[in-house]
Image (cartoon, rainbow, N blue to C red; front, top):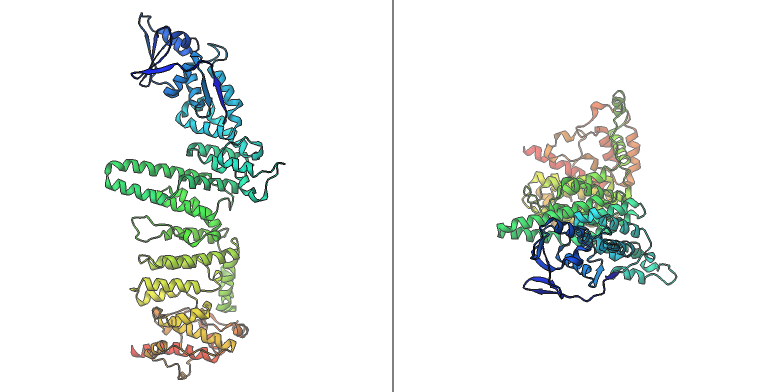
Length: 635
């Protein structure tokens, strides 16, 4: 760190009963009061260098006693006044980055300019500031931080702006060309070889060598400094994001613990509520300032860091605009998130849930809507013709393809990753006994079907939710299980689901149906049903060992109660039968619109598709329909 010595005489100031005096053969004739402190000094050395004291003394009436001057609004403080007084006496004083701001403000207040004496204190401080302070890295940072104590004077004298400009210019310069005198910066200098080349091992650290140093600044000075750095346009956005993360970790550690402690203190003593609110307000301002500094480029800040900011914003009750801005940035790179990062604590008084599911729902909706354009409908004149010429199944395929194309702005691989993350998130929030079923289903439905190649993780989440919510009625359990596609369950998941007594019976039958269809398509041996499942089926008059009666082709889903209806799109043959179904679908091109069932599938095409199924699945499907027939007979 640079320093400069002025004067050559030894220090002769001393204190007597809270009064500062200077040893001299001549008695003092001037008393100066500065913010509660009293100095007994001499007019000649002080008035010869301080124009302000000259004017004050000239305006005061002359007396035989000591003249008293009061300086209540003195800039710089008592320490700075004493240093200026010592300079007037020729006593040795030392200037450095730690005291240059207060000395400069005090010298300006006392008007110690060249108008009074050439080479006065203002001139000497300015020379030291420009030639030494602004050329050093740590000197500039320390000086800028010290301006916080005298903001108005520092702004008027240009100290703050000059320090910020100096820091911004050094950040865009290679560290080998900057006078670094900081602990972290010295490590960077050690990583640079003798010929000036950077070592490959520490190259990433060297690029962001400045982040830890400027993190010592207060938020207002840091904000201005980062704005100057960003406006230079020479620093990559990812380095800006890393610097913001360093600053946030420096000033926002364990923010949830701090806020909880402040709330407890405020509850224990009402007198502490103001101080607790003040601390929270400072943290809120700090967080919102960091959010405003985030670069606009995607990936400038890590998704994990953005989610931590969102958690802190939730805890600190930050502005809704700041929350939505962070949520929007998270949605742009949601595939990088981790499940634990998405577990945002819910602090709303209107909700008893553990986690803020609504915020995650907003993030998911923004992720899925990236770059989407509103869906376009076909002309009205052609709509009826298309429906008469094409079967319903072909229309469903087209709708799914259009959905995939509209959401192509986020890559397919990103959607697959996000689907995995969401299923893991569902498994975590499913344990919350206060989580409403509607919110659980809303999160699951946000992910399109084509983004889930398998439903094993989703099934685990449903199983956890059923265990945590044993009071769900039959209708709610069916509603929950409608988001599950049994065709996409693995063999292990099917085995577990077939023995899961918490699942609705129809789901168990569907699982068995598709599992036996899969076994028949691959030529594998159909596994023996567990005894408890046999007993469950027997209680509903279903005997797996006895072949069922013939299937009536007149049976439609319109006879099935609304509470028991399930999507017929799930009753399809295995992959080995797709070509057969496609051939039979082609024969139904002249299907009339009046022949459509309420579920959208024609009677003849449904029967033809059923005939194409293997023997094992056909039997299970007969058992499925026999349940409905027996139920109607009892009614």
